[in-house]
Length: 251
Image (cartoon, rainbow, N blue to C red; front, side, top):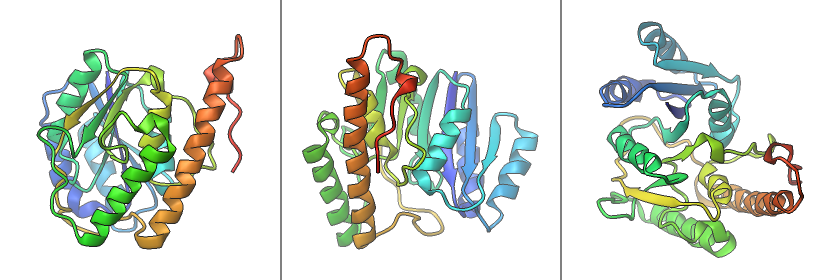
């Protein structure tokens, strides 16, 4: 019924606590897909060992770094659930929020965004540079992408959606903000939010590019999301054209 997709890159130190918290959740039939993106710290071996003991956990691998967005797409392609939840593996996204996301989907939403700014949510402590980058990205997303305007946290990395909502993305796309594209897919459909507290990273360092590198990648993602919006609209205007046969936008 539910597939939870987590992309990992050198998260070995965080996985025992994360997996224990995931495994203790009161959820219906659930699978946890861990897509490892070239870890060298034992992440892959630990996931394989856990999967051997608990059939709910599945390991998918990719040699080399394909960015979070591509790893998440890989997990979605392999997922078997009616509902999908996307989250990080560094304990900054509390697993205990998943039941609330699932309730929103079961109540009829096509997309449920876990938001730092909804009631009960909090962005937590942030360095000034990260605060500026985060709010700048949110402002740009709402300015340049109409589908992002109805939600309070359009750059959240924690969200759930119905399998029927998903449309394949151009395999050339790289980046970190899959939600931008899922918001486009959910345009004019029911979208809801649940609050969550963004927790400090327990161990390791962020894999997200910072500073000007982040701005460059994010602007490219916004450009691709706008192109994706146009391609979906063209497809919907053509009689008898299935969503799976979309022409991929050009880079």
